[in-house]
Length: 182
Image 1 (cartoon, rainbow, N blue to C red):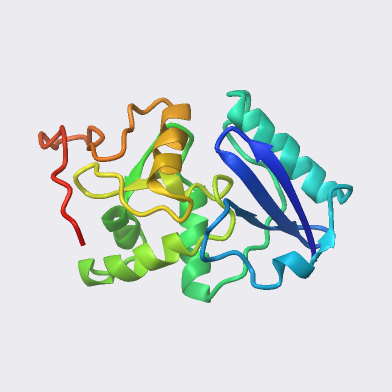
Image 2 (tube, helix red, strand yellow; image 1 turned 180 degrees about the horizontal axis):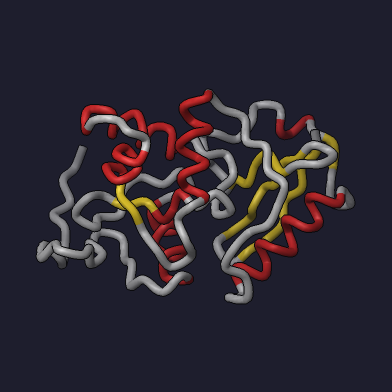
């Protein structure tokens, strides 16, 4: 396993990979960073990491909409199913946890499990979990932090701001959200 960290407009991005596949893209402080990441070999010269860095750089420059990388995220079969569906969300589009749940053929009661799987996505941005919002358009959890989620959505043409709802088709509940302390 290899690792390489590079600076991007939203802070450092840690890439992890095998010789042939990207296995992770993490912002500092994410809970899903592999515990052995610091012990991985330096990988700036590994071909898949060089290509991943080039594609992330192009994405942030507005020149890339679709990542084309060999990826091998580690997770349960259920997580893998959710992550595959995330890859189907086109640049500039959004979906909800409920819509993913329905696409999996599950009932509404499974939306929390879907949310947990989305939150455990180990390859930020390339597997676009930032494109998943609440049913009312609210920006909800993002392992890299809500400000980064909002910034990623703005890159893709959405007027996203933390604490506001994005317009959702057929939903007139737009505007500020009431923030409630935990």
